[in-house]
Length: 490
Figure 1 (cartoon, rainbow, N blue to C red):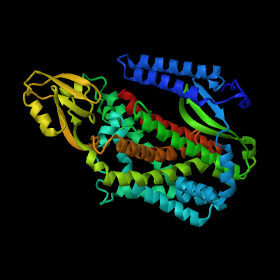
Figure 2: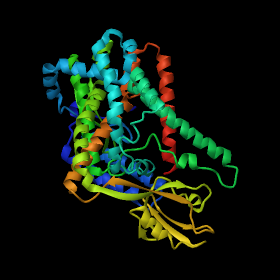
Figure 3: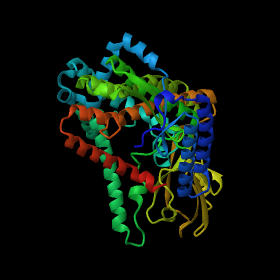
Figure 4: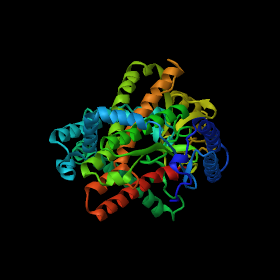
């Protein structure tokens, strides 16, 4: 990494200038994403525009360059507040960090952290993990009404939060036991391994059939990606998504700063890191030399503070999300149809119609329910041209000899009606997205991946560096494999 051009003392973050440049360049990126240009060109132009924006901020003395495309904006905002909180609430913050460590590592905390955490806190943390997976995790389906990733969104929008949880399966029991033993770290690794297995199966299926006249791509095209981008303005609503991310990043990094000050570590600055002018993360800058001299217990508390705060805010935003879901949002339910299954080697299959996509119209007729769709399809004759519009694209498909194109259509319900008004809908979507993103960011940060907080905890607590390195490599491989289905359908 290149050394930043400007020292911290010379830098001054300029909110007004940043806001103006942010609006300009995020507008350019959104325009390129939805333009008719080939995706490769759109992405290349977006990258160039982001670099230009970052370089303009350097010229204004507001940014420093980490490397071309990645920039830092430093300030001293919030440092005084960190000091005040650290001096008055140290006991609560220390307990919250220990609780977060147990949530991350389960009963394994007794081995990994030994006497650093009390047995009462271990018991509380393990119970919290089990309760969050059984009572909170099912409701993470709700925010997908506001997420635009067709491969994922269309498949979960019509699902009830609890489904068939009344009859807990053996797999569900096994996952709960694994989470109790190894916390969210083990739970995430198992989930990633499952998704990676499906992706590998899809690749092998395609490879085996690639020499035939009709290669089988269903393993990848019909899989739900375990990793996909969540970007305000593209896959998330711009305003709600941006506000949710700001809340999450501020809470996460501010908590690191508070625990650092509780441990008497100097915090040099606060700010954010961005691709160009688009923030991808916030940061506080504690004195690393002072941290390295602390005990393992204090180092781990500083490292886990952000995840602990995110888990706490996940529960805090969960409450208004659930209250609004049951008492306000039912008035906004809409019925919709979606492509439930695409028959292999059918006209729809050969036209790359995607299972899970939302069906918008059939031969120009709106299809808000299955009855409408069946009425629109009655006139389809053998070898006729059928126009199918989905949330992914519009397809012109020639029907087979029976007048069918080879799809099975399902019906579901999702949020999106006009009542009780855009303001209430905005508030609900903000809480719902904050609830989901706090949960996801906390869990992902526990993983032993370089630059993640979990990486620091593993390295601080496990002396065998090679073991941590091998585990990190394995997890990174799982993450990449989980992204394959999303990349395949770009």
